[in-house]
Image 1 (tube, rainbow, N blue to C red):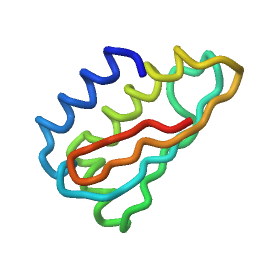
Image 2 (image 1 turned 60 degrees about the horizontal axis):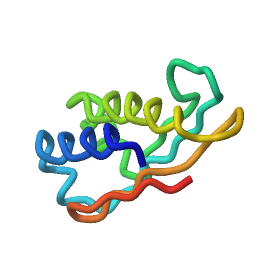
Image 3 (image 1 turned 180 degrees about the vertical axis):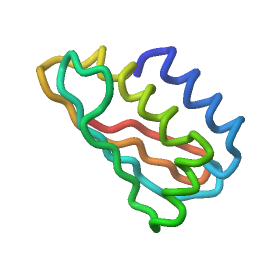
Length: 92
């Protein structure tokens, strides 16, 4: 993962401590050259997804996905960001 993406994930964990308390996955897909991901979806209850959107967490993660996609080969990429009680992992 790119250094700037690591930094952004660390900032998110510091800024939004709720990310340290969840076990969740954010799935995404994006075409090469897109300014934003085509799809971003949490595997959480709808009310928690809405709460994350209101806090700006989901939008910040959309920007992070754009950064991550720059370093991938191919015209289409998809993956997920897994959050597990303070730890996170990006999977393609």
